[in-house]
Structure formats: structure tokens, C-alpha cells
Image 1 (spheres, rainbow, N blue to C red):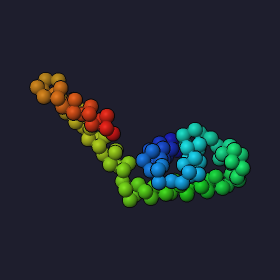
Image 2 (cartoon, rainbow, N blue to C red; image 1 turned 90 degrees about the horizontal axis):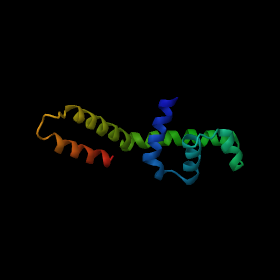
Image 3 (cartoon, helix red, strand yellow; image 1 turned 135 degrees about the horizontal axis):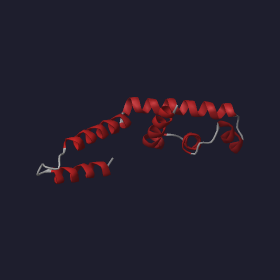
Image 4 (cartoon, rainbow, N blue to C red; image 1 turned 135 degrees about the vertical axis):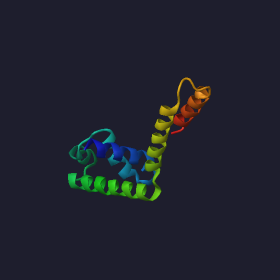
Length: 110
């Protein structure tokens, strides 16, 4: 469950601007603020089932956006490459400091 939650949070970060205000609100409350479906339903005067349906449809939309645009996948690949580069840099290499600075610049722009 934690793995799914983490993935949905990342997808939400990348694609939230493509969602409606209500979708964004429900996802933020459910995934980021850890509200229950019942709490969201009570807060907005809708049924628990309506909130559940909205959250599930929005999750599917986020997965669909990722399948088409692959922003999260590319982000993960860049992170893996940065990790590999960090492992290859040695302190004895005369270019190590310059390479570390470049890697730090890459990390800052993730």
C-alpha cells in the first residue's frame, strides 16, 4: 500500500495541473493530508462512495497520463543515472570536484 501511495503522490506532483479543482482537492486531502473517504464526504456533503469513485477515477487518469507522457518514469531514470555517476566519482580523480558540482547542479534541477 505504501508503494502505491508513494507512486500516486509522485504522479499527482507531476500531473496535478491536468486535473479539475475537485479532483485535485480530493486527491490532496486523501493522499497528502491523510483524510479518510468518510471525512472528505462529510466535509463536502457528498457520499463516501462519490469520493471513492472520484479518487479511483483520478488515480486511473494519473496512470493514463504517465503512460502517455512518462514524466515520472524519466524522472526516476535520471535519478538512477545520477546515483550511478556519484558512485563512479572517486576522490583521487583530478576532475572529481568538477563532476560533483555538475551532479549537484543536476540534482538541484530535478
